[in-house]
Length: 369
Image (cartoon, rainbow, N blue to C red; front, side):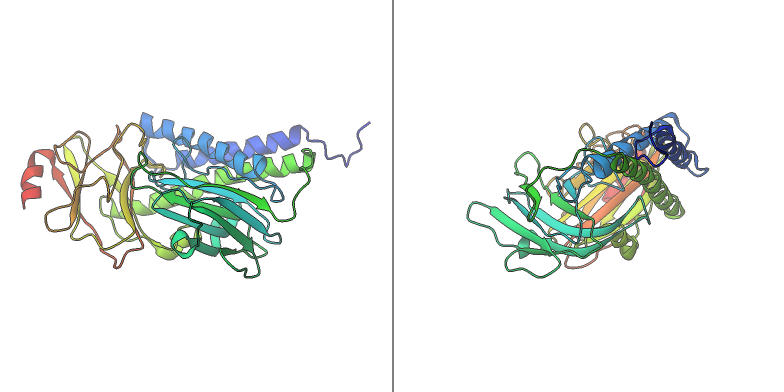
C-alpha cells in the first residue's frame, strides 16, 4: 500500500500540468491578436514549440550538477524575436557550484557567454549576472579554449556567476552560415564524476510544473510586447533597452522592435541614413508571436553581409508581399502583419531608421527620391 506522503506522480500532477497549458492558450485568443487562419494556427503551434523548449530546459537538461547545452531557439522553436543569424546554446547551472566550458572557437564572427538568473517561468525576467565575449578571451593557436564559471575571480578566461545564477546562454552570430564554422563546446561541473541519480517523482513533478509555467509565462510576456508595438505600427523606434536586458538581451546590442501591417499592394520602406561602425547588424521579420519567419525558405532577414548598401553608405530595405525588384527585399511569407527587429551589435553610435509605407506602383519613385 502506498502511503499518503508518497512522491509517486499521480493524475493530479498530470492534470495540473495540462491545466496550465490550457490556460496558456488564452494568450492566443487575446482581443488585440490577429485572427487569420495563418496567425491563429501559428499561435497554437508556437505554444507547442514553447513546450518543447520548456521540457528540454526544465526536465531533460534541468540537473545543474550534470549540465549540458541545448538550443533554446532554433529553426522550429523560437522565442522573442530569435535572431536567424544566431546559434543559441543554453545550460542550466547552480550558482553555488563552479563549472568549466571547454571547446574550440571556430570561425563564427561573434561569440558571447552570459550567466543569468530568473526565468520566464517565474518572474518573467532573466537578469544578467556575468558576461564575456570572445574579443576579451584568450584562445590557443588552434582555437581551443577553457572558460571557468565561478563566484570568485579566476586567472584566464572567467565568467562571473552568483548564488542565484541558474543558466548560461551562449550566442554565436554568423555573417554567412555557409562559410563560417560554429564554436564547439561542452560544460561540466567541477568535481563532478558520478552519474546522475535516476529520475524521481519530485524531479518529474517539478520539471512538468516549471515547463508548463514557462509556456504560459513566455507566451504572456511576448504577447504583451507585441501588443505594445501596435501603437507605432510600421515605424521602428528604439526599444526600451533596460527592458530588453531584463529579459536576457545581449548587453552589446541596441535593439529596435515594432509591429508591421501591409495591404497586398503596399510596401514598407526602411531606410538607415548611414550604417555605423559595428561588429554586426541585421533586420528580421517576425510573425505576430515574435517568431522569426521561416528563414529556411524565405528571405526574412538581412545583415551586413547579405544586404546591399546604398551609394551614400546607408541602407534601404523593402518589406513587401511580392518581389518589388529591389535587392534588399524582405518577404512577408504569406503574413498580412507581424513584428520586426533591428539590431546594432557593438555599434560606435546609435543610428535610428526611418520608415514609410508606399504603394508598390510608387516604390521606384519613392526610392529615387
